[in-house]
Length: 232
Image (cartoon, rainbow, N blue to C red):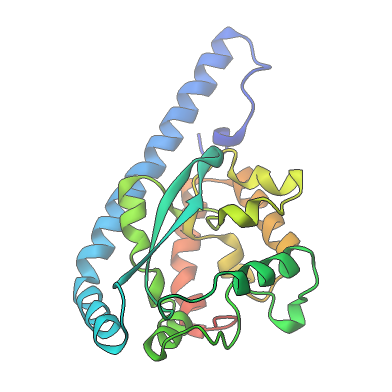
């Protein structure tokens, strides 16, 4: 059942086709159950941290507690992505757009950081810089998982202006799975990888997906976060 999720069932005979589609539905159901139980458990466990961070964001800078942004998910569907606000209100998004353009074009190398988050970003608040380094700004994405827009594990959710810069093969990372809070590229390379290598890791995850792979990535994520390697 584990690896049938991403297989093409169309070439099979009728009996095998029905079995393939059944296995596919069961695989997706199992992944959804893991997402619901995992996100609920994490929200409950980290609820004191949610309250503390929300208070810190509100008391240290003007603006909303949460940062909301349109992102691209499964099959190109757009959804509202949640994070704790880490930047000053009114910050210019064109700075990040230019950075992403250079990163996808390969003009920012692994040695230079190769991150989606700009190193020493001048738009960050004081508490925001800490939240970014500790990856605590990502916690509200658990609500995206609970809602069904995201999964605990999957490709990084893309920004619409980022998609416009993709080559056709880059788009394949969203054809079969929802974007995730963590993924193979986060635990293997995190920010210290090129864009093309990140996409290759996402496609490897899509091809090799199983519940056990999700669990393995989830277990490796705390180490990747605590090491802060490649986190800005």
